[in-house]
Every structure is written in structure tokens, then in C-alpha cells.
Amino acid sequence: QVQVVESGGGLGQAGGSLRLSCTVSGLTFNEYAMGWFRQAPGKEREGVAVITAGGFSTLYTDSVKGRFTISRDNAKNTLYLQMNSLKPEDTAMHYCAASRQPLPLGYWADGSRYNYWGQGTQVTVSL
Image (tube, rainbow, N blue to C red; front, side, top):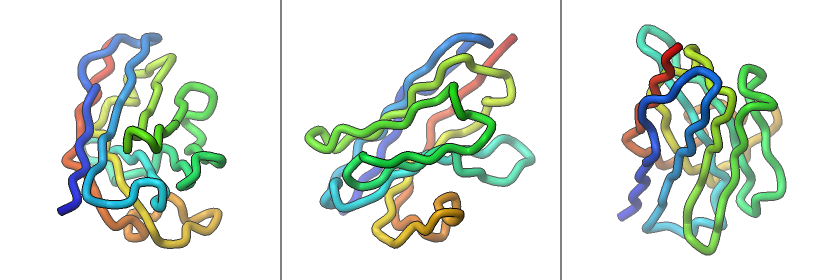
């Protein structure tokens, strides 16, 4: 049984930092691309960042470029999202997802291409 469990969310201050973690079990982690998604109240889910199975390539949505860093430790079956220079607009439920499907450029944020999802961890950023 595949389990995807996010942690590390909470309350942060604008300009501050948070680090999210996502631990995966029940699958061969290094065969899956991994993505972070988020959904704010009343808004559609959006892709935040993606990293390839081997960890050699990453992509980010424009609003987090230069502030967030996605990384993975395949030996620990764990995905990370380092969130710096937080903004109130980063407030959202953040989800981790695993994909074994092809993710062509331009389609990495398509949630339907991801096979497994976590329950999410809430990030709230105050001024």
C-alpha cells in the first residue's frame, strides 16, 4: 500500500522560511517524479514545483522561482520543499504527489498525471 505523508507546515511570517517534507512508502521512490502542489481557499489547485526521478531536473511555477527549492533524498524516500521569503499569498494547503507517467514540459503541473497524493499540510503566512 502506497503512503504519501507530508509534514512541516504551520504558521510562518512574511519574509520567513518553512521547510516541507514528504515521506513516501510502498513504491520504488527513485522511479517517480515528485511534485508539490497547493490549493488556497476558493482557488484552483496549482503546481508549485516538480523534480525528476533522479533529482537532476526541477521546474517551478513563476510565483515561487528564486524563493522555493524542491529537492529529494532517494535514499530516505523523502521529498522536500524549502520555502524562503514567504509571502501571505503562499498561504494554502500544500500537497505532495508522485508520478510515474511522462511529464512533458508544460504538463508537469497537470495533476491528472500524478498517481499518488498525500493528505496535505497547511501553510499559513502572516504579515
